[in-house]
Image 1 (cartoon, rainbow, N blue to C red):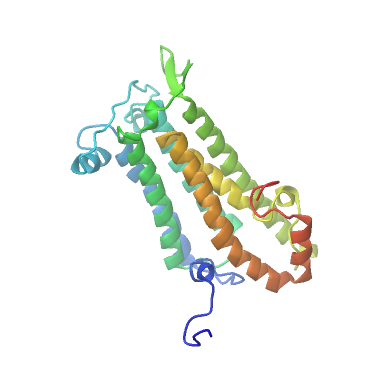
Image 2 (cartoon, rainbow, N blue to C red):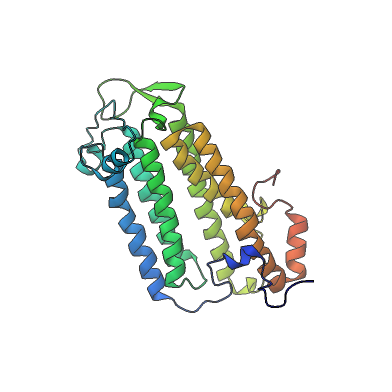
Length: 284
């Protein structure tokens, strides 16, 4: 017999940070989130910088981990990027900038639900920790994707000689760009659908939402995994991709399924019959 003193909510509901159905303004949450996501960019630069005494170098040295120096020197004319030395390091910093811009756009333009400061703090810190872990994995000699095989010779702008780029960098870049685009497009399509008065109280079934019921989570999983693949290679990149997909498929999708079942009732049941895949079209 269940203990009546225990909280009957499933574990995934206890971990949900979004105020489902609550659209009251949360300016402090927005300010917290925007400020922390912007602050992540100089932090990632400090972790990626190969200079002696930089934050990343110092942290790895204290842990007794050898660091790698870039094999090439950037000459873009942009000191903030050139100080990172390698095209891969600069790419990882651009990933941090791109994900921050996308998430700020989501919070300030695309999202309906309330986002209190504690939730903003948790989400922002999670993304900063993931980005920081990627930066340190890239700088650490035992885990850096700079040594990943195979390597592809490329003629790149700002270099007077061919540069050998790990294939993981190219694949990871594709995952990052496609994932970030999918997540953004899906959320923009849902907002455009919900903003039309004739769609009030209806389930969004347009565009990419015909692929999977939580297709935006596929986008997030792809760009998160691609980010890690560029930093630390095949195994780490694929592990993060599938770990994110599993977590979102069980925790976040579980909360949303309960919420939408209660809100939309038969509409949601019909949507699940029409779109049987939770995150990964044709598979899961």
